[in-house]
Amino acid sequence: MKYRVYIDEAGNSDIESSDNPNHRFLSLTGAIVELDYVANILHPELERLKTSFFSTHPDEPIILHRKEIVNGKHPFESLLDSKTRMRFDMELLRLLQRWEYVAITICLDKKHHKETYTTWRFDPYHYCLAMLLERFALFLNRNNAIGDSMAESRGGKEDRRLKDSFERLWQSGTDYVDSAMFQKCFSSRQLKVKSKLNNIAGLQLVDLIAHPSRNEILQENGFLSESKDIFGKKICNILGDKYDKVGEQVYGKKFI
Image (cartoon, rainbow, N blue to C red; front, side):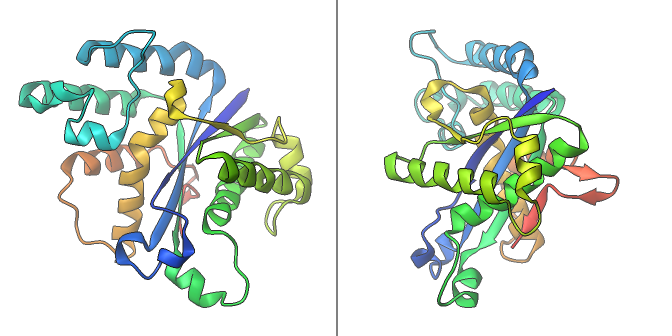
């Protein structure tokens, strides 16, 4: 079987902004999905969800963005109607529960990272990416499968740096996963980088779960008060069964 991990971020990777409480934490979330499942189930059902609630056309597909959905911004104005919002939320939660995917979230305290490594430190995004890909490789190895990785585009220079970082992992490994395992499990030495505007179902799925997952980890570690986001809590309840785990050991949530 071949899997793909779709990767999205919550927060920003700028280490110099880490003293600002609003920018202290960065998290990367990955949604691991089997590629045939994406083609046969995830993409078609996501498109049906959109056409059921929003005005859309194949030439100008609607792209699901959590922030715009929450605020009912264009093209999600129909969600400003409370009854439509309730029906949409119920259907989306039903799909998030039923869809077959495995979640991994790595959350980094950039302030602590900056203070601990005063003379040399990893770029926060690449640090989180390495830890996420370690867990993806271990997932593939456990399941005797192969896979590749796709991240949301962050712009020309950033995309090049991400691809270079990914290839270094593939060539050299990490302290915990050697290069032999990466090369055995990853079907490509290159990270795929795409814009959400390409209407990629996996990137839209991970966009929907990344922010609630990050907030849950921060709450569990005492850095965020109890959220009033009831819908986000419902997503987190679903993710409890989706995080990568072996037996009772959960590998899909990591706070650094």
